[in-house]
Image 1 (cartoon, rainbow, N blue to C red):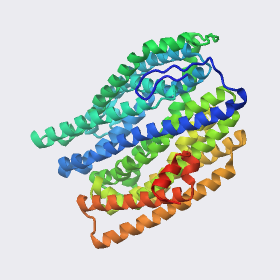
Image 2: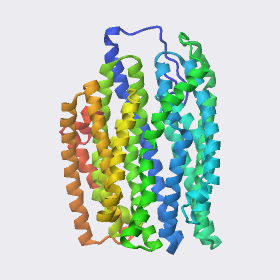
Image 3: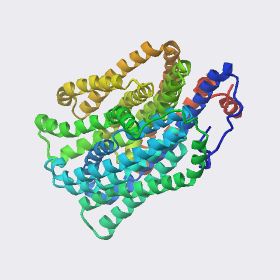
Image 4: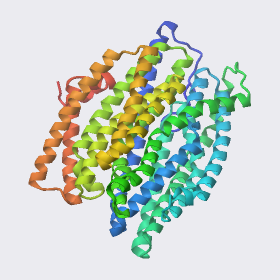
Length: 563
């Protein structure tokens, strides 16, 4: 039984005719693989488009800020780092837990319990949103850490916390039914509404009224509230349309399990705790960087406030904003794989679990390696298009692109461990990595300056990933040999693409040095197109895409006349 079709309608599938049990495991594995691909495609599309839009707005926004650009950018980045942490606290991992538990009970044909889970989670989310918004608003002077410019910005970011928790719980509800389209579409609507408000408010304040750049940044951050309202309205509308059909699904449920309200709340909280800690991992690392980087740089290099703002925004905001576009690929896969693994666990289908682990990791490397290496190869024109020509910015973006592979791998591995109920181990391994980062931060900032925090982030997550992979192999014996061979092949093709694009960018810079946005845009489009063509040809020519994406890829190869 499936809940939502491509048009947002609930669909009932007859369960009277059952398949032969001998074919069930294979069908489950194939269905899970298809769900992983379709779900990842929806979440990836929504996330990528949203993040690209979220990066593009910087171009006109930066122009309108004028000479205040670096300071405004740094304030925006610091405010969002604080907001991101409060956002994770406000949702306390409950949307991910709801998705996982709904998938679990749906696989047992207990749709009534799934609905009760959703309602209880919604009430918890509403309360948490009010509490965290109040704490953030009242605590703004403390969170500003002595910078009065930050107080109005932090307070403007407290308002979205009232709406994001219920918005997140609705997304978790739909994801629990392995339906990712509503989440992806709501994410896109949220971003579009947010960006329209950011650009409109900034233009009005800076160009029409000749106002203060701090006011413009405050309104730009308040735009998160406008975006959340748009996404929430869409999901509430979709949910209300489907209530009658969901009632029919509940009527067909087995209703053989008795679960009390207290047990439901306990299960939500128990499952949510690992989600909040693991979902917050990248944010916590960035939060630590924000409150240690400037003091360490002051201690070692005696910089002015403007110089500190410049270096912080290079790694803490500019490069992170672009790098998180490709890290969101991993996050999209993570959102998809948790309910699938949870359902396989509920069926006690260990073969399907092993297949999901292999499929997810191979698909991750198939997408992430070329994305990260490609971003590193086009770092100069990319940084120039979105910000401005800056050799320091180019180098930081290149380095951060490599670190993105490790961050993405951690995101996917943490999701896999949560999906197979290895929550405590996932948290323990996160802490192991965090200890390395905290221990190395002081010396790495001293020796490597702006690259230091990025390097310690990579080392910390790499340590965590090592422990996680070892645990998964020990407990599930997934096909490590196949994974290594497949990943090595992907790495070879991605490296060839990286070399070709790097050479192309170098040669284009000789012919027309891309120091302004228009030339950089031309260079970026040509280089990115070349990279996509090279990598696409290699994975089609040597059948890597067939193995990971299915038989339909053969049709693409025929149309492109690739043998």
